[in-house]
Image 1 (cartoon, rainbow, N blue to C red):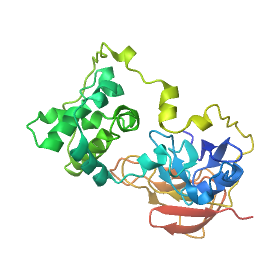
Image 2 (tube, rainbow, N blue to C red):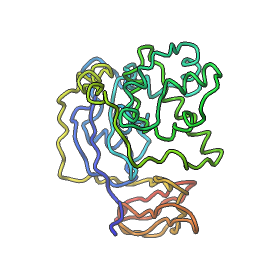
Image 3 (spheres, helix red, strand yellow):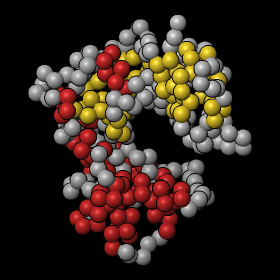
Image 4 (cartoon, rainbow, N blue to C red):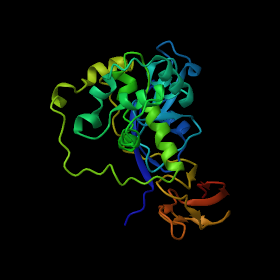
Length: 296
């Protein structure tokens, strides 16, 4: 019953004052970097040699200073642009799949270490790569099992010795299934039985951090700052959720209060209501966003 107007985010990595902030939804990432003391260039990196990652180093995505805090934001990392994390997250999907077709040797390390496979899910990344790479006959279930992938990226970030990406195959398959309107009616299991080797195939966090080039940040503290971020304006996206984009119910020039409804769920659709995150004036109702300025 309480609208989501703020998010707690950790800002860490190559910043001068790693910190955890309470920021209104719609606050720019550029302002969060400023709140963390700006980008750190003392370790030999220039600002042009650093990149921003929204979320974590495994399941995050590339971001820019113009990006904004959403309901699902959880962190912001400034990392070397030449490092493994940024390199992997920046890969073009189609190019990554072509690399897999040319180099996969079917070692099955991706399957042996896949967390979902070890939990007992019907997910075997190496069989999907084999089917697609070589055009072999395959059980359709092994392909549609892509929907079970949690996109943790362990297969490409740690498991594959050739730095290939079964993850990219699964993302591509998920996209194709969505476009076809495919609905999951076959991969529903209530009695999962974990793999007998699960306890012996867990990846040590320290080794994963070393592989990702994150060892310099091990033990980095990002204490919670008690004073909330006070942006002069917020730009709130109309789609921060599963389902249809929300429909604005305010107009340019309207006065709004924090917590006030500014966009509603379309009739008959899955969606989420969106509320103002600061007191102010609606400065712009754009294509897919509402910009609110804080004014006296």
